[in-house]
Image (cartoon, rainbow over the protein chains, first blue to last red):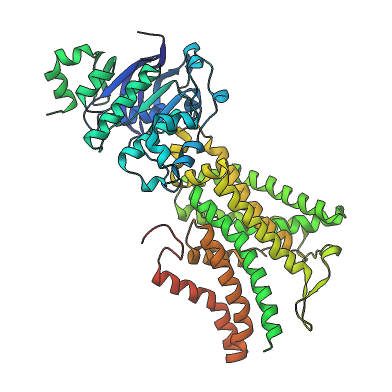
Length: 247
Length: 299
């Protein structure tokens, strides 16, 4: 595995006093794509939310780019280089596309310089995001609530990219999108991976994930049930499908 | 009733409406972004008035005293946010109402301890002490016109801030979903302090400007706060445009009402109707549009 960018060790987390995660170990290396899978309610979203301080971190350790961020407030984890595409996308409805992108953007100068690879990557600018998602450029003055689901997901990805992340975290990358749009999103992620960006992606599309990802992690009842290289996925398809609840 | 008197009252109503607007935008901003119902908002208006009264005794140049009063309010509002308000953001509205009502009582007592029970008076700056001829026979105080102008400028500045700057985008985004704004790398705690200070400064600006017009005394902001709350309900929570339209409507309705109703119905009943008219308007608006004239939520 390449040098670890995100390293989660023995993470226990939840909401209030209700514990959801029981000792999660997870690592994402630089430039690596890791698929996070599991049935509904098994803790995927809680894991993602606990990374950015939106769920209670009770025990364990989260390291990002070699820094212990376990006690960091969410915004500092984001500034360390974690770009979140949240479940449900949560684009800002009353802001137009461009404002959505600009509001939380950080300039390349503000990007963390912790990793050598990170600083070598081309910084994200508004025009680069528009090149990447021409659809967003066309709709730049439309409000968030006037966008289709696919456009919202592109916007949420573009918004995260403009925070200059070294790791993109997508919770439900293609949920609720039309098949053609899903294919767009997978291709987008492929291009980002080719550009050297590390990605942690939650989704239930086994085929697309096994094409994109390097490794997979399956959660079951708040614990890691299985993990390994994606090549395992095709060999043990039936066991894995049972775990993630795909018919 | 002469045309001149109507004109004069229209200017008074406009000026009163703009003071209400300065109060109401702060209320609506704090509620929209932090989900905070702040009954201590009138205290910020009062502090602005006391600070200008105190500053004017030490500083002769009015613009300097003006700035000093606003800066003192900013400091007070930061302290208030950090020490009292922050834990309230995640609590229920009843807790907020109780706690901020307590704050307003405490601040009302504090100014009595510092400056005494006697009302203080502030002189308007000399260069604004004249009058402007509206018609051949009617002249109008320059100072009152200046209040309307400054309040309008403050409203314009706030609109530019919210609509055109990155801070404004973050404030609007934070009003929708502060958690996501934070998860994308914005220090929401700092953002909330900023919003609280902005909203306090707008109220204080009203107080600073009202200083020469009304007696500066403990509790002076509270009646204005109640009207400002009515303005927010009428205009629609979270709407800047709604706050402006409703403020002017309430300002004019209140000002003209105090002139017209007693004239038509006699002093006793007329004054009762005049006092109630704003709330009758509020009830009518809620009955037709429960989320206010420009409210976002379809209710």
